[in-house]
Length: 261
Image 1: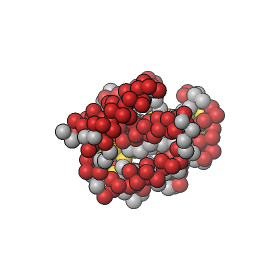
Image 2: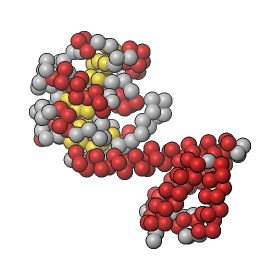
Image 3: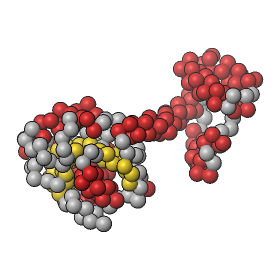
Image 4: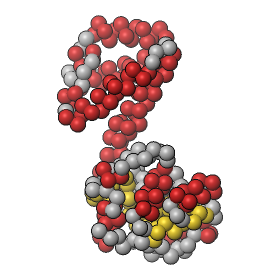
């Protein structure tokens, strides 16, 4: 499927911009410009996406098919207002999971192009399996954005602002919070001179298991068994050495006990 967006520019050169710009470029779309206040970052991405980098917003070429804001949530409104004041009809999208469509103040050609994934610049990701959530009040733009996303992924969905915001909260639980627990476990192992690598097969099995079982059914451990004796012993040990880790253990244990009560 050919997209009507053949020239795209990016505002931002971070993790999301890096993956999208490189992917679009590989699919034959011209990445016209990459803007970032940090010139080194925009220069690197421009080289990777066969584009031109700029560090001054006044140098932005407004003759593009789509402008993608892949920046921090708090600067989307300010930057978009500055650009749209020069060309109100420009098709624009942002890539945030938490910012609503109203950030563009009802400009007619605005939308949201949200890839539901955790991105790091140096970690390759197969975008074909990444869900892309599309939001727009403009029916024509919405279909064009769906066609654009279909170049990269087989999972393209229309989502409202409310649906996307709720799903982003769920994503924080499964990605950010889960990864933080891994980091806490690694710190704990290092503190006690234990090999954290020994936990990696367990982590992999935990993730793989939920392909076959709902997470609710896959739960194991002392809290699921309501084994208060083990819980008390582990809390006693943690209380004596790490108050923060003890509080995390208690919150997680109480949550599991409540779910299976």
